[in-house]
Image 1 (cartoon, rainbow, N blue to C red):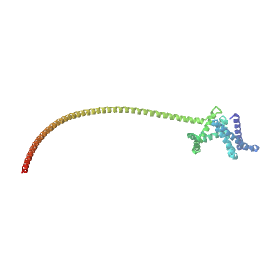
Image 2 (image 1 turned 60 degrees about the vertical axis):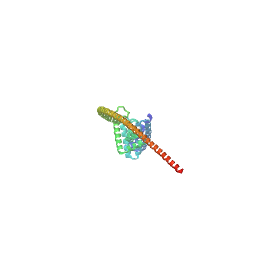
Image 3 (image 1 turned 30 degrees about the vertical axis):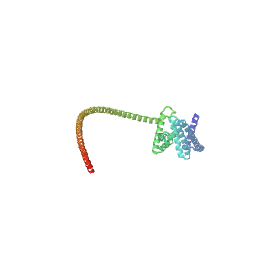
Image 4 (image 1 turned 180 degrees about the vertical axis):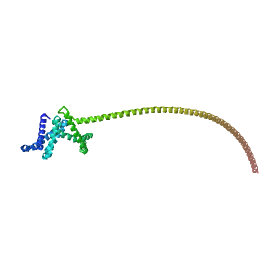
Length: 339
């Protein structure tokens, strides 16, 4: 926003707060008092409208502080205008606005977009309760943002326990930041001292956790190294034992194989000798059997020849006798016939 806009914004805010203060707290009467109420309402409504413009400009430019200050200004303007019909509430809210701007003035400035004031008090509370500095925002970011993430974050912020924690964190942060800005010699700046304090504590815790983790890691590494060395020693001993057993088994195996070969060779030699003897005996038996057979065959042939010769002689004699008988019979027939 331009410098002229900021000036008009400040004038409207201050005039509205002054009008509310005079009307609701000082109870100014007469003709002046007659117009203070409507004028305060009009200025509150104008301030709320300007707050909307400031919020849009801040968020679009990436200035979250300016954006939430605009939200606070819008809320303050709307609340101030709404409470005009309820004097006790209007008086309390006017006191709140004057207190916020007064504390801002003490801390070094009440500019609309940089310093501590009533708008930043309200905007900061809304931001800490429901905005990007709330616990619900952490929930939303852990879920990746988006509609689902921010729905879950909003539900988390509406939880009574979370609301109490958000409120305590926001109030404590506001007090610390106000005190820090008041002490800071660089007027017009607005540092997040509360955030820096929490970061310092977080860094300390992180460093301590890192140191503990590194110590545990070193101890674990040492233990692991010892276990590894012991394992190597056991492995070497087991290897030596295995090699000795293998050598002994090889020697025994070679002896068994050699003995088996010697026994086999002896058995083979003996079996060969026995086989040769049996073969020779078989050949002798075969020769004897052949000679006996030849003798039997010769004898049988001689007997056969003898029987054949005898039969031939008998047959010849019988044939001769038959011829003689035939001749005699023929002679007798012929003699008879001649009679």
